[in-house]
Image (cartoon, helix red, strand yellow):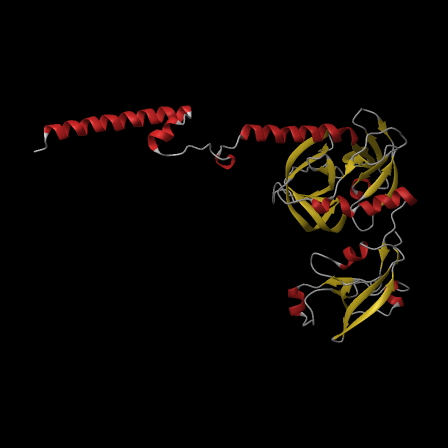
Length: 383
């Protein structure tokens, strides 16, 4: 049997502990130091890392950044309308219409767009500004190596975009596209992220095809008509020129843009000389992969194999070209240009494009199992 006095003391002790617990709970909520004296525990405020993330505030900040970007850049985005008269099956004359997008880079009317937007010599083009004015453009230059064209309209005091640094773009950062969606919804804004960098793409359309390299991939919606428009960061800077989307019905949310750093040299050339000059070596080649190297028993699994095409005129080394002048031959494998290795992500054309007309470059090649190094002076590619 438990002694009544002990039992009474246990009840009293239980009540005291319960009271202390209740007081401790109240003091905990009040943040009073009394709890420390009662329990011996020290109370501290939760760290910033432990506090709940204020999602609403983050969303508002991101939305505000997008809004500011659009307000800043939209006045310098233009819509490009194309029209061409053709005869239908019955011989009747009809007008085919299309369109694209561009952006203004100088206050006196230089505009960047895609080459495929203005590549039809029989079409008529009209530039529509965000303020409602329209102009007939002059096509100043088309880049033979990438899907880029530069136009000019006769105007002054125009709003311009700011060009960013596409080399600093990070996968996962926000991206904003503005363009003439479906060639009928001017200055449509879409938002996403940079999905990947340095993508390669065989693009086709309008009866032409082109291999594009070093592209930015984004899931910001890029529709027909967005071609040539700006891809922006949240500083309102252009980091890419929207140029292509994955095949419809195959994938969604996969669009591509030419990095702005890849076109800055062409833009500067047009500003200085009114044209785009591209250097060339003068060879036809097959990019070497591990599979091609294995199937053909090649000594290296990278580089560019000089080879002729199917037609008689498609020789591997062009007559009177820089390649011919230094003695390059079919079946030579070019492995480096001025020390830079040629591989699946850095083609011969891309490495040559990093140089200017008149530059002397060192060509490293494999011939009959031996490595050779030759000097070539790059000449201008005639368009």
